[in-house]
Image (tube, rainbow, N blue to C red; front, top):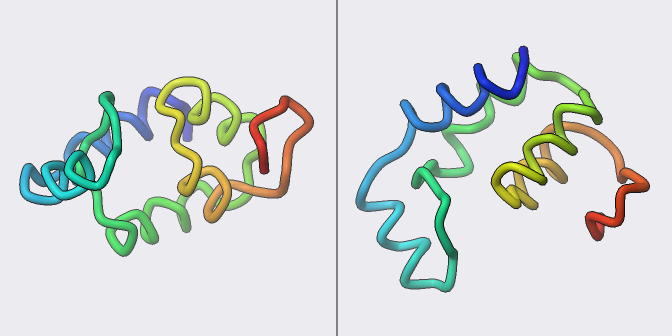
Length: 80
């Protein structure tokens, strides 16, 4: 699975209601409004993939997704 496929899946999973909640809690664009529980099947497809996690971090600043679902801490200064 590559970055483009993950981005398409995240966009498809997004819900406007969840997006509004995230924004009201301080999240910034870009975001799709995907609940953490809905990311679990996607994470199972990805498994541990540090290069993809780093790409997602750079693309979306997707801290929780990268940290919880894509692998161990990287050395790219992402803070995990």
